[in-house]
Image: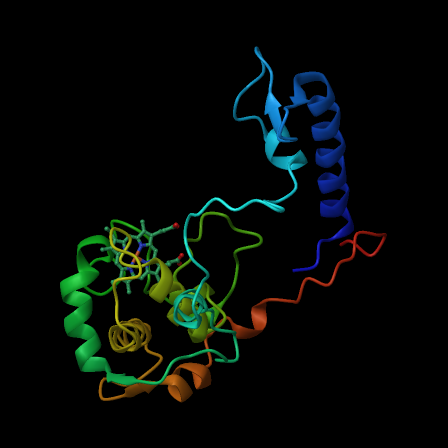
Amino acid sequence: MTLSPINRLHVRRFAIASLCFSAAACAPSADGETRPQAGSSPRSATTIATRPAGEGRVYGLGRAASPADIAGFDIDVGPDGAGLPPGQATVQEGLEIYAAKCVVCHGPTGAEGPFDLLTGRLPNDEFPFATDPSVRSTVGNYWPYATTMFDYTRRAMPFDFPGSLTDHEVYAVVGAMLYFNGLVEADAIIDSAAVANVIMPSRDRFVRDDRTGGPEIR
Ligand code: HEC
């Protein structure tokens, strides 16, 4: 990720503040490690910021991450569908899985809550969110890409057991959510192409944030 100039400034300020604090509150010990002195906070950001990141030290803990470990974390899906895993499911399977794993928090058709609304389109698929804060967003009236539904659901839902769904189950419940919003038919088969090809009602309602921190900021 590239830091915007504003963020870079903050990082630099933080680093300078940390160094000053370090000089006052910490002193190098015999082994060269920076340790807090009496009276200073033992968990201050100072110690972390000034210590060379584990350089030259062997703690005998852990092991090198294997390709399988890394693959387990490498689950991001791009808006265009890049990164979607193989697999497919039917909307009908999705409705069953939804009823078992999602309904308690999102309601029978995703429109009832008690938690975030998944279902709901506005007349003419309007997008009044910038001007009317009383309008509640749903997946159907706000999210620009179905691929993001896949990514988010796979990593974050069910809220009380995130990461527990198989890819098959994620395709299935994405299908259910699309069906609730009238975006696929009841007999649809949901796979990577289907998820990437759905045109969400709000797809063209967002603009790329290309600000760089100067007078062009809108
Ligand atoms: C224990 C309650 C609970 C369960 C079960 C649950 N969710 Fe959620 N869900 C939430 C909460 C709470 C949020 C809001 C999380 C946040 O904003 O950080 C949420 C947010 C979402 C969102 C984003 C909505 C938005 O517009 O921001 C989606 C999509 C979603 N859930 C899908 C699902 C699916 C699919 C399932 C079943 C596999 C599921 N959830 C199961 C509680 C739950």
